[in-house]
Length: 224
Image 1 (cartoon, one colour):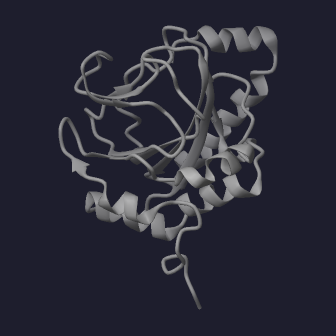
Image 2: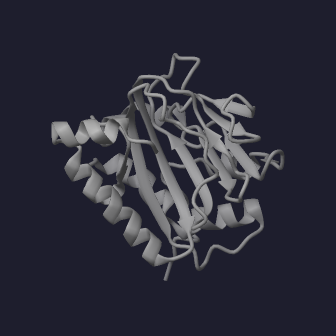
Image 3: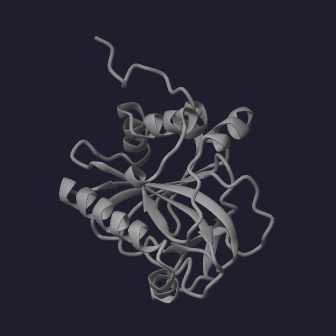
């Protein structure tokens, strides 16, 4: 019986992910310029979720087409998990995945705030799905501290660009506020199924509240 360890990716570029350099300053991270080939860009984006609001939405609350779903299938495969394990020399067999997506940013001061990620997260993988990002602000930054201007590396959240990093107490990252369509997927390997359920519940409640104008306005201005 064939397992998904053995099946090749249908969308992800395995060679690009494997050969991407592992950086150690200021923490362990790896950037992949083309984790998805440019040849599938328009077809995948045509099948991507339509997200009109700000903030993040859990994967179960999104509707999308077959080709985008194939990308998700690759990301949730044992094969991709194994690549991440090899990249960081760690065991993720007891670390279930959770996926959320961002679709837009409003440019408010509290978007993109610097944070090291939750202590429940083991590895975070960010994958861009923005068609183009012409702005100087809004680029994701690998930070040395909680200061968003204290960065070692930044990149536009454009289609196919991937950043993965080992979560620790100083894995600071963020971006400067910029209004615009900013679609990116976040896959996290976490410490328990309880955390997966909590995250999907939390984002599910949020997605129901966002269409209500007064409640959406409160969310829009709330600290993050």
